[in-house]
Image (cartoon, rainbow over all chains, first blue to last red; front, side, top):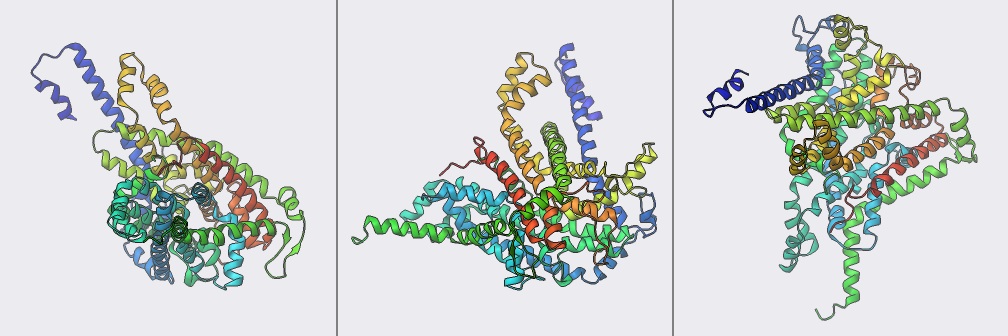
Amino acid sequence: MAQVLDKPVQVKAPVTPAERTARRRTLLQWIAVHSLGVAAALFFTLPFVFVFLTSLMSDTQALSRDLIPHTWEWGNYKKVFDTPGFLTWWKNTLIYAGLGTVLTVVSSIPVAYALAKFRFRGRNLSLMLVISMMMLPPQVIIIPMYLFWAKQLDLSGTLWPLIIPMAFGDAFSIFLLRQFLLTIPNEYIDAAKVDGCGDLRTLLKVVIPMAKPGIAAVGLFQFFYAWNDYFGPQIYASENPGAWTLSYGLESFKGAHHTDWNLTMAATVLVMAPVILVFFFAQKAFVEGVTLTGVKG
Amino acid sequence: MATITLASKRRRSALRTLAFMSPWLIGFAVFFAYPLISTVYFSFMHYDGFKPPTWSGTKNWTYVFEHYPYFWPALRNTLWLVLVMVTLRVVFGLGVGMLITKIKTGTGVFRTLFYLPYLAPPVAATMAFAFLLNPGTGPVSSILEKIGIPAPGWFNDPNWSKPALTLLALWGIGDLMVIFMAALLDVPQEQYEAAELDGASAWQRFRYVTLPNISPIVMFAVVTGVIQTMQYYTQPLIAGKVASGVIQGAGTQFEPGYPDKSTLTLPQLVYNLGFQRFDYGSACVVALVLFVLSMVFTAFLMRRRGGLNLAGD
């Protein structure tokens, strides 16, 4: 703060009273804005801090009103990992999120490309249907879908009913990718055609390399979607704990450790941490994706 | 080369389109059109998953609208959430977006901190808030009582459970913040300068320069907020389950919408009817109500000028 206050003194030209009030106003504004900023930052970060601190408390202290751990129980995290099933949930989540993301990206790119760059009858209708699918709550069609996967294909108790559909394009990813592909000038595509590239080669050699940021954003969103999904595993995997994901298992963790808030919070940290780590590595692609979701054409 | 006629060229181009669109065409048929038609069909059938479905006319419909005790409370909760949660989220998102454009020191750090909660997985975030707001022992209750404010029951009190969910939704404001931030930075600077020359106050600059410029984004935030509220599932369900202390798989039946139906939403009814009561027909009735409501707002979103940018080549 002192530095800021010192600055006007160093200015050589005489300071008029009007300038001085203007400067004071700017300074006061700076203080007001940044105090608000700090207050908001506390609101956004304190929940994380409390959860983390509680995850390191002893089980009796977690039920008390003290906010700082008396003893730092790092062993809580080991206990969480030793919980039967916890590692399986990790593995299942990685399969669901990883495989699902790859399938979604591969199947959505050609569709998005066609919707962005081909001219054909029914294109606008297709796009409107894509948006409708995107906005459809999954619960609307869950009864026939469940009957289809469970009664006809006998796949309940597994995550396949959630993974297989991702090989057939995901509406949100198609829409997002299309928005991104619209920003690629047609000249590049025409030039590739002139050079004798077919449609597939143009897509693979010209369009995809240029669309990498969009593809990264879509991949991240899809990964997070699968990581966070609760409803899907609840419908298809609930009967078989061997197929649970972290998001689904976490809630049962609270049930099993009824009053052990410390262990529950440690498990919560372990479910949150990977998402936040991925975000730090891919922040730019992610924020770009959020802005792309339909606001800016 | 001479053999390529106009007709065969056109056919080739149609085949090319079909090939590129094929993943989605199959997906659309199998995972959208078929189940949607099937949902309509089942809504007129009595089906429990074991005995073959039998025609039951409008019985499921009258049951859901007239006798199912959870339907109207769920619809009322949805209305409450649309009016209060969506409004507050838009106002708060705009506020935080404006704040971040004003912050000149450490902008990147502030932006990241404000954005992070949006990324917290819903189950984990809800568990965290259930703990933070836990009456008696939660840090928020402890702090409130230390400064002499009696802490409410939050997720355990029917009057406070939706405000608690709103608080959770405001914590995860990152998506709206980023969208509003981008919109605010796009407002032409000259308009602010002109307004300032005319002696406009800060409020007048906001009212007559900022708002008109960002109103399409405000609309977008409101409509997508309403659609998200129709789908609101995981947070109210987990909040109710954790607060009621139900132990999963221990044979205790979870009372939907705990406490006192105050956290019920329409998607939860589909689960309750279909997967707890095995009344697939009635579950499909609720599913169709949910479908109609979501599509009305989606149509609204698509018709909005410049909204989803449907044009383009």
